[in-house]
Image (cartoon, rainbow, N blue to C red; front, side, top):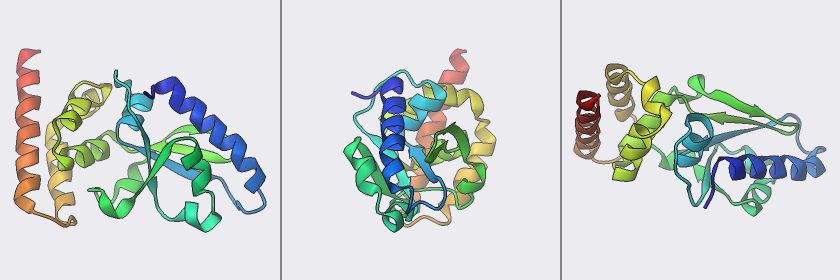
Length: 177
């Protein structure tokens, strides 16, 4: 099981290992944590995860350092298989700067968009049971989600249903508070 301290330790270990690649690296690598690991690190999600997912935008292959991350338990996920808003990069938030890497998490809206699109109950719970939900205006989220949906491959009805299910759970929680 991986918690916040473990994520930080693994990032520090990767940073140290990357020192031997300094002749290949022209600048710091940008690591974008996604999924539960980003919620644990930035929004204090009170659960552990089994993996640390990070977004691959191609630079790990260019520099040949993907195995360094994999050795520390990072799972490198292709941007192509995620449901993201096309402008998510503009909203990335730096959470840690080390010698060889800058660590980013997606903006609260972009995390929520990708998790809602997946449609799993655990993803809805991750949003609703972390500090992330306090950062979100539901109407802005809805607007961004439906903008992003125009760029996704797959069944549009599924994505609409996922948002409706999430929105119903969100409204139930709001009504209780």
